[in-house]
View (cartoon, rainbow over the protein chains, first blue to last red):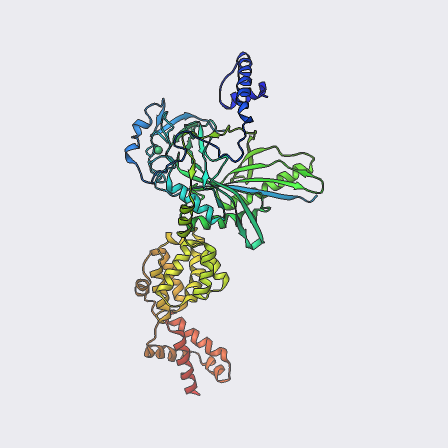
Amino acid sequence: MISKEDIKKVADLSMINLSEQDIKCMEEKLVESIQRVEILGQANTDGVEPLLQVHEPIEEFRKDLVEVDYILDREEVLVNTKEQQYGYFKLLNIMD
Amino acid sequence: MSFKTIIGLEIHTELMTETKMFCGCTNEFGGDANTHCCPVCLGLPGALPRINETAIEYAVKSGLALNCKINTSSQTDRKHYFYVDLTKGYQTSQAERPICEEGFIELEEVGKKVRIERIHVEEDTGKLNHTETGETLVDYNRAGVPLIEIVTRPDMSTGEEARLFLDKLRARLKYLEVSDVRMEQGSLRCDVNINIVDEERGLKSNISEIKNLNSFRAVEKAIEFEENRHKELLEAGKNTIKETRRWDESVGETILMREKGDSQYRFITEGDIGVLNVDEKWIEDIKNHMPELPAEKKSRFIKDFSLPEYDAEVLTQNKELANFYEKTVELIDDYSMVSNWIMGDVLRRIKDEELEIEETPLTPNLLAELLNLIKANTISNNVGKKVLRTLFETGKSPKQIVEEEGLSQISNEDELIEMIEKIISENEQSIEDYRAGKDRALGFLVGQVMKISRGKANPQLVSEKMKEKLDSLK
Ligand SMILES: [Zn+2]
């Protein structure tokens, strides 16, 4: 069963801020959702291959050739960043 | 207390493909910052990944060379974490079903088999440059470069074994030409998982993961350091925490980076990529086109060139060196002479300079030219060594060096007899000694001739003529 601590942990890992109120509400909804999904667990899947995708389940490989047309100009790469320097994205130091 | 050390390795290797793992951006090393990027490797919304066929082929090749079982169907997963080195918020990797499993490398030297748990494909991250002024500059050229991660079972118990394993792994990957496996450039990276157990007392330390190891030597040193750290803690009745540590080369210590939580990556199946199907026919085809691996080359060298096992081992450790040997013996018909020169003066030189053979001016043609000069008695063996040194420094050909420095051996009899007569006239005592049956006197006199000829006289010829001359004086 889902506990408050589980929700806090997942929220932390996902970098989502949740208030106590949010967590309480989330707990109820998640418990309900999971109970519903768990019904699927009753189906017998012995010998059934897992299905990862409904569309095009088999990946078609790409030939190893440079596609110049898709490579962006540096101006385009950096267009949405607030700060840049020497062609790099510039951030405050995030050394851990 | 008797402790046993348990070591497992995780090795990341960049694959030498033309393009990245999931997009057609060039996989060329370096380049101006952020010029090898597209919507896919920048993680822009809506961009869809497409898997590089050659990266999959290289992963299969590596799996085969490491005795792995190849999974005909595998899948990709998203490994979530928030850090600026990847913009998507996750790394596309393989968790549940990797492409290769259950391999091994045999360490004959220590009679041990190190099992490989898995090999999976994934993408490399962008490169962070931390400036002195406290900022970080990010370059995404490396983001999305194809990687394989090789994970061993915890089957090693000393730094030396880890080193042996890595040597063999690197040689194989290099032979396969799937990666240039350079640790200094980051195309091969190794993390160590280590803990110790005291079976008698049922004690066990928690596993530490060590990162930032930039040479095989650092791997060995970090293992030794951690072994002691774990021992000391257990002996003091404490224990290690489950943690990630960083090797600091300058102080020779590992330093805590972070504590490790459980299931922190929230893996989910990558919905944008289908099942990776590698059919039997493709695997068979890759098998049929596998290059010769170190062990096979070694036995062939023993057989074809009648080399002793040790020599064959040394020559085949490194693919370039082995190729160099083979090309040289095509040009000069003396297998053991070539191997003695390569294993002696040539290897010593490249080790001293920390170079690879292909980074020096020496080529098989030049070595063959040098050895032919020696075989033709144009220069002596010792002068040959001197010529090789000059060649390494200047890149000039042996013939040119011999000519420019006037090193060719004097085999002109008249010239030699003149020198011999000069030496005999100056060394009456030695002539007496020779007559008295002292063989050493002959050696001394020959040495004197060699000296005034500045090493250029043909020693055999001098010895022969000197003996004739002395005997005629009797
Ligand atoms: Zn790209």
